[in-house]
Length: 350
Image (tube, rainbow, N blue to C red; front, top):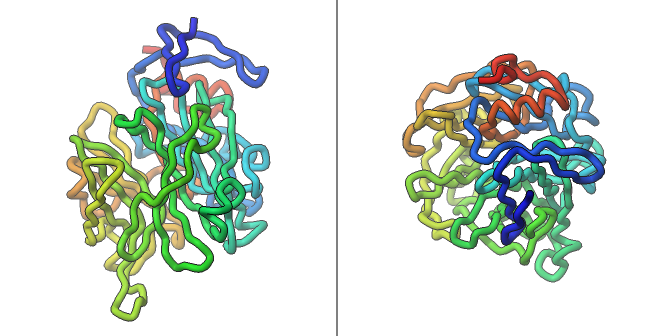
């Protein structure tokens, strides 16, 4: 039996079977023990028309990764986006494990270039296999507030325990302004649109993109690609920075130092993604060295002080700006049944 709660939350007492979009869906148990990790990304190699599509990979230790589905898209972008491409996928396990949420930039640069993308893609699933979706075009949905939107980049979702809703945040650039500011809006119950007009969330001094928020010990850590400009407005440095706050509503306090090991070397990185290791009070900050076809990470226990020497992942794919979520063996087995490629350690029953 399924008991419906407010804002679309669903309590599952046992592993059950539900139906959606005509397909049988296996719902995983509540509060599973986490045994591995799932990486959602888009590809940086191969045919250009196939790169900007959603892919999955799994790992036992968050270091050694294996692509699912032979590194082919798990959901064709043409089925879920307005432009025909997606970038920067962010995956989130819902509060109390009731669902999974995935948001991504609605952009197909291979076909349309970098001049304009109007919105984002939003997806929801009960099992990581079957996904419902929606598209939010800021100009079409909110023409008065966003009549001249140029870019809507790198959306992410986080649960707001005060509002008891899911907050979606992203960078917006308007055509008549150089500013790159973070806006946010609460998702509707089906996570296929917003329930309110997006509002300004955080305005970094010099602008920022690729935001990623994580909560630790009552403090929200907001990681992003920031920059530094001289008195004439010329950018002189860029890299991964962070701001902190005790509330998702702010105010956010910027720390202008660069966390990544490459800023001082003028090697560009972007797409910061932070996640906690299973059964460890340790965190990984990974980032995309997009000009060098590399993906590396630094680690921390307090999210303020990070290791200084970057480390590399072992992988059989070339990810671009992705995110990582912990998974249980039961979930890994569902993923393997659908797409194949999951490590044997995650397929063994305890």
